[in-house]
Image: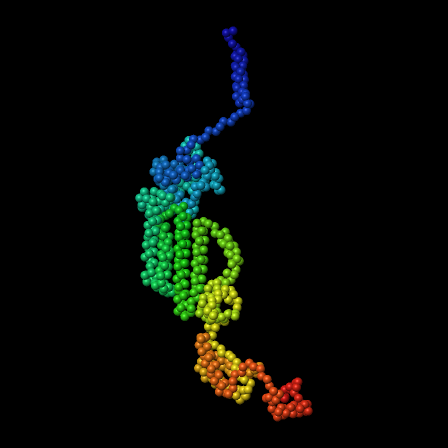
Length: 574
């Protein structure tokens, strides 16, 4: 029994192998099974270790970089840059330098930190791989460049976000394009790298100095006493001695100062993010200065118009000038308010539409007022009458005392004051008696019927001679004619123009003419008739002999058949 043959040994080994296999299969079948629940549970993922620099998200990387570069901790800021392509020997010196240059580039890049993804996976960008995210774009003379973040593995394999190596490789070139320029490069690092509200300390000092220099230049260039300023003002027609001209100089100073500031602003190399703020402030100030200047120019031009009207011996239409001046000021002020609202980001289109609708409603509600306003403008512009003129309108007459925008005021001969709305004033016939070059005297002389024809002829001749020789009358258009037979008088028409425009002077001439006509009538041996009713006897005023002769001639016409009645042949007219 101490010896075991080869066959026995072969079967023993097989049995051992079979037993080991059975045990292994049993363990494999028993291990995944849960005797209680009969289900499997997946292992919970182990969170990656936290990044001490906050580079787990794109927004955290940008925020951390800004927080590190604000106090000039560029050695910490270099941890946010993918510097794998920088040789290890140059990393300690090159890394902080690149971080400093990138901060300058970011200051001149338009970006919004709030729109950068705060998720570990980032936000997919069109045209970019999944592991990259856009921070912003830099505008240079050579084109537009993108500032990108890239998800890269940390030394222990954890994925973090850093500024991509493509961006890092472009930092030196971008820095040359958007750096602080020759001024910033020559200043001490403290002035360049110390920032207050995203501006370097030297830029704040430069802004203050530029403002002061701009104002000093404006005060030196624009002065009322400068010969150039005075010559330009005189050529335009301004009165340099008028206080209004001095007030117009102030907004000109502001405009020149703003222009000087705009020209020197480029030397400050302000960050791109600050440009919209500075441009908005400049636009705001420009609107205010231009509005101020426009209001002053309106006042000056109004004075110029008044003086030119006086030089032409034309009475200045003071209400029109005042109305136009006030209207232009209101228009300029409204436009300025709209532009200021637009400068601060308010959408003015809806406001303009609301003002238009409101204006239509106001115009409809104040229709009569608007009608009187335009009537006043028509009266003032067309000038059918002027202040001081004596006129007749409708059944009223009086002297114009004031022409306003809404009404016209007249004083009647009874010394009462009539106020007429301008819309009504234009609807009636207005007769300007003040504009007459001559005043008509037209009357009818009524002589008694007892006046003989020769007496009447003598009266006509003498009155005609009176009209021709009177120094205050116009003989070319005067006439005196026997005009007809009145109910109780022989009517003589007297028509003559008196050479005067003054109503009081006309009354004096008319009085003198009437007295002289009375002398002529008295010298002729006749008199003026008075309305009366006369009783005649049967034979009074009848000449029997002449009456018989007339009756005989009519009888002869009948006998010969030549009575020209009821028709009157042309051949019998002589």
